[in-house]
Image (tube, rainbow, N blue to C red):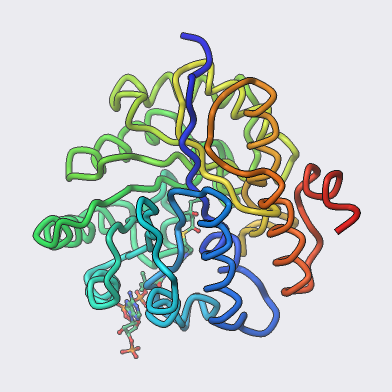
Length: 301
Ligand SMILES: CC(C)(COP(=O)([O-])OP(=O)([O-])OC[C@H]1O[C@@H](n2cnc3c(N)ncnc32)[C@H](O)[C@@H]1OP(=O)([O-])[O-])[C@@H](O)C(=O)NCCC(=O)NCCSC(=O)C[C@@](C)(O)CC(=O)[O-]
């Protein structure tokens, strides 16, 4: 199939990147500035907040205030996670134009993350997607643990395919495949994708790879050969997984943009601005910069 001409980057730093920070709750102002700066750097899709239980994820407790504080730019999608109807109702009230539901390919992970089985989660998403449709809100679907689970180890690609298919059938326009704990390697990623692509057209799939084992760029390069052209990333590689010891964040946006620039693949993102943002946000929250490119290009900043 060969590499795509263009890649759409889904920036998840303000949500996936910040949700697991264990220190004090990050201020709404910092979150809003992060989102505004990412839009200024050319990001056209920014997952900005999460309408989940603040008891489960305290860092996302100010989702409505974050959405209200953003200076919206034309052409930029500011999305949010909504695990259930309560979340979607909050998102609608906050003027969110796109949301995501999130399931898993592993039963144990589903229980730990959203307190229900896979089947229960899928049943819960049906009314969420129906209500979203009534409000002209597009819904993205996530499947976690597609290349491994912290509790169950290997996950059968057929299970990933089945959950992905169900999400597509119930109305998700795109399915993002999450290597939640970053354990995948290129051959495994391609095998998983090949199985899922039997059920869901590859043009409706995105790669959401964490970099825990330093494999994310290699895995992305591998699945791009098979038609993946939507990639989820997090500035400065922010993030982690509360359920996996030592888990790093998502693949860093800077690293992906650098690789894509080198491959001659268009993203529309300003790498210099991105590097500045990565250095700024990591200073703000007192965390190491997880982007190799950010460290290399930002050493004078
Ligand atoms: C799904 C629930 C809510 C179920 O949690 P539950 O405890 O089963 O929910 P419940 O329906 O029994 O309600 C319990 C309480 O939560 C409240 N509640 C219920 N829903 C909401 C809501 N939407 N917003 C705010 N509050 C809510 C509800 O009102 C009630 O409040 P109380 O009466 O006790 O005061 C909970 O498990 C939860 O919030 N989980 C979120 C977990 C999460 O955000 N994980 C991270 C995102 S997924 C991810 O990062 C992976 C991904 C997407 O990036 C891909 C990858 O890398 O793999």
